[in-house]
Length: 173
Image 1 (cartoon, rainbow, N blue to C red):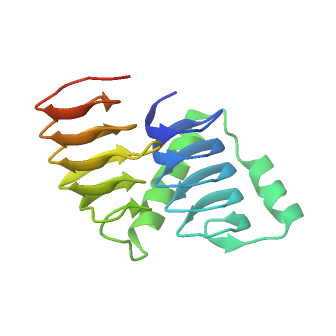
Image 2 (tube, rainbow, N blue to C red; image 1 turned 30 degrees about the vertical axis):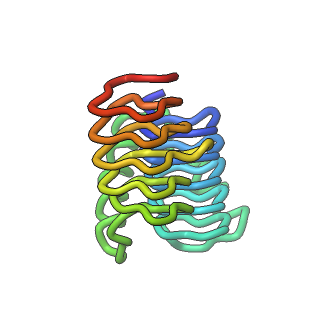
C-alpha cells in the first residue's frame, strides 16, 4: 500500500520508484532489496535499515556495517509499531539522505532516453516515471506509465499497452 512506481514487489509499504522488492518499507529508488526499511538509492540489499547508496550489502544500520547479531539487536530495539518512533527515524533518515552525492536522474537500463525515473525504456525524450517490461519505446513528453507503449507523445498519466497516442490519458491496462 501507499506505493508510487513500484513494480514486481510484495509486502511493501510507502515506496517511491522501487522495483523487484520484498518486505521493503519507507524507501525510494531501490531495486531488488528485501527485509529492509528506510533505504534510498540501494540495489540488491537485504536486512538494511536507514541507509543510502548501498550496493549488494547486508546488515547495515544508518550506513554503518554491523554483524548479524548486532543488527538484529538494533532492529529488535526499534518499536516499529510506534508512530512517534517511526517519525523520529524518518527525520534522521531525511538528514542522512541529504549528505551523500546523488545522481541527477534515475535512468536505469534505458537507452537514448532523457527525464527521470525511467526503467527499461528506449528512445524516450523528456519522459518521467516510465517503467518497462515490456519496454516503452519512442516516446516524448510523457509521464507515469510504460508497459509496452510505443510512439507516444505528450501523454499521461496511466499509460500502458498503446501505440501512436497523442495527449492520451489513462489508456491501456
